[in-house]
Image 1 (cartoon, rainbow, N blue to C red):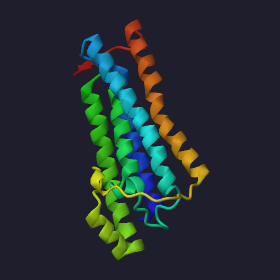
Image 2: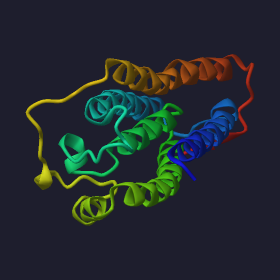
Image 3: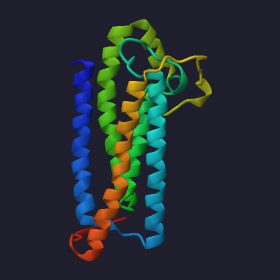
Length: 200
């Protein structure tokens, strides 16, 4: 399995998650009273913006060099997969747009599982590509949760604007959850979409 196949599996996993979340959003609503519901949605909005900014920031360091070069500076000095960490944060924010903690946790947990499966394959491929240097990196830097005390940066970055722009636009897809959730909520209020369940 090469890196392109691994990334395709990740995208398919996210499509399955999106379809499942879509069903919850179409036929479910929040059990919380309005102020709590709104607060959960706003926390979700913040998480989505953190995701967009974080993924763009990470792409400045690794854009186009994931296989050819072992990147260990900046966000990659504290976490081996910061791009995926920000995607998990974004997925949690998307789930929160229903105004329910349940969907936020489910979306974040599913994103974490999909990325974990992908990361295991990527680690095998990168171990083959970079050998002992990568195995030392595996031992020193956590897979997901950052170890901030290890922060190390570089004085200069070689950046690919095309890849950074593409990463930014891809991350902006998370923002689509905000108007979609509001539109579905409006349809629920009009009675055009029936609510079958209320989620905590």
